[in-house]
Length: 290
Image (cartoon, rainbow, N blue to C red; front, side, top):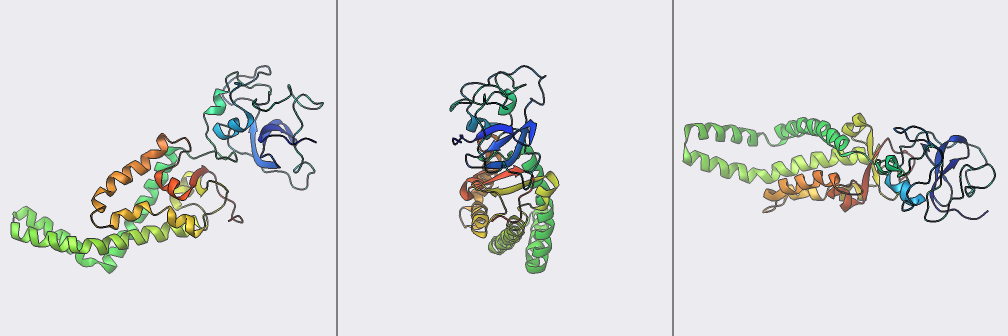
């Protein structure tokens, strides 16, 4: 049997579904043959410019069912479309296979972006929601740690506000100098707390509590599973700018640009994802892959 290019083909275990063939074996990712938003039609060819691989990486619905265990077809390449028992015409290199119900422009397939192996990427809205949840938890954690290891910082801030209300310039200057002297220690405590929090979840579950609540997870772009420690640390490199003297004042700009970047990025990666070669996807990660 000839080797077929990677792409979406009739699912050997379910004629109502398509399954992703990675060029070597069947994956666990499936998608319905019919558009979830458009009425059923006759077999139509999607855009000629969207090949099987392109369709898989640009917009196939999320995976649904796992591969059956013990069946005999996992290692077999899909038959070319048009052979007996297959639906539609023969799929060719450079063309997506035909199947009933596919809209002529395949617009519904373009609406969901995926990883290279067909896993749907998390939307920016989900990522933002997860970040807000984690931010609340980390604010509480950081406050408790600062109260324990840098209580003088809060006292100095309170005294500064009081001096500002009384417009005592000498006291304001002295307190501002004291706060600046403590800022490095405070920055190290907060950055360390956030880093330990993230690494603990990224390298075990691939999900922080915020990501768990929104049903998303982080993985390496080239393979599924929780992050290794090296990748997780690279993902925190940009955030370390907040504790670097003379640069920390610009961190807010970097922070804002970082979290807005997925809005226009083709792979929906933030800047810290690009540094670490990671992607945030829908669903959980398998625990047994590293």
